[in-house]
Length: 297
Image 1 (cartoon, rainbow, N blue to C red):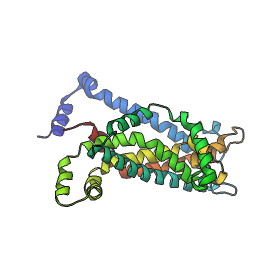
Image 2: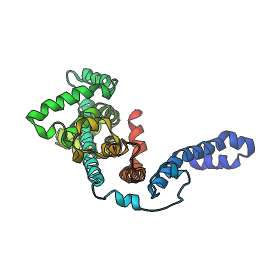
Image 3: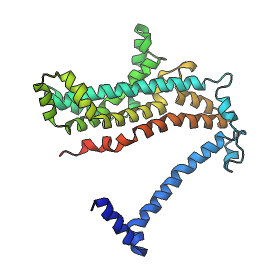
Image 4: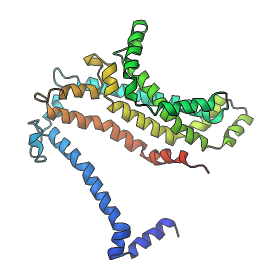
């Protein structure tokens, strides 16, 4: 009899106060957490469907339903869909670049023994202890200097913003991938070497398929963080047509007296769709990707 069957039979025999003490309180906590998460989302959805477009009028949920706010997102003078495209480009390239750079660094630290390896790992760990906000002035001056020489990766460029994101995420993601790579037996590498495979062939054909769960986790976290980032994007991007979604929608809400809250809420709802779809697609990898590198067998 499996462990799941034994647990199910045990729970079915519990009754009354004992059931509540051992099992029931978990259901109550789960219900409360669902309510806590869903209610704010319902208010945002209600405001997005309210043609009046006011926050005060959203106290009564779904009293008026109209899709005019969603239509206005693409209206004259609105750059919303351009911001969406900019955000998807920046987030997608950042996610792919983070996965490739982190995997390459983690493979090197896990499989190779070289001078300065331990010091480099320690340095990566120490860098993560300092808040990223401490580097804003340095990043601005660095990109400002690069702009005069190589404008493509200077200020007010999506490529420059991507480079900043890639550099900031390398340390933490390398440690996450490093633990997962260490859980893969070295005998696989040795067997590949005996068959004549190079390090590159071993990395791409053997190691990378085995670490897909953690690659999915790293890619998802990188995509979400870059899609929702505001501060770094606001420092780097200066042109209205280069804005990402977070920066552009902030400009809508900057003046609270004239803010189109209905359109703002509609834009927020649409902005959540890519994250939800990506999460659902990668959901099967998330738990195993986060936990597999934490235990050595």
